[in-house]
Image: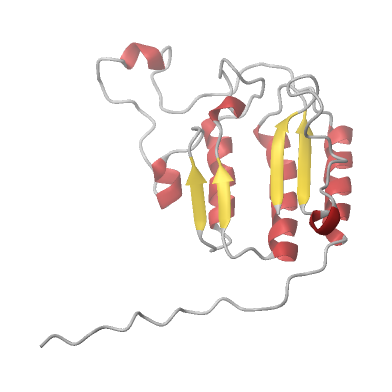
Length: 189
């Protein structure tokens, strides 16, 4: 199962359409979540949480690989979204809540503290690159006043369509997670 939340249109032409759902034995195991410029924390979460909840319910993965790209953050020079570090981190927190092994891949947009479930002070300590954190000198990138071109109607349509695609999948067999017995230890002589 792959799920991609991404900028859609001329950014990467010919890829990532909501209709691209896989084929053959992989049909319906690819979900593309096409987004427009300026999506903010609230709009992103309104898609991410219900879609990923349904993925976890239906597919029941034994592990999750989550690629956290910084280009979705507000202010990223290559990106065109308006998501804050806190909004991005909420996605990591949400995926951690399923208590399945989680592999976080780089690209930025999250910090080790989120992966570990701890909080860190927002103030950046003094160091030789402090001027790069101006003007407020805080750890978190605040959203800008960028226009969110993702209308509520568009988000509702995307959510409904993808949840419908997921409802077509057969549920994974009901197997509960169980504690793995410890490795056999050789007694010391």
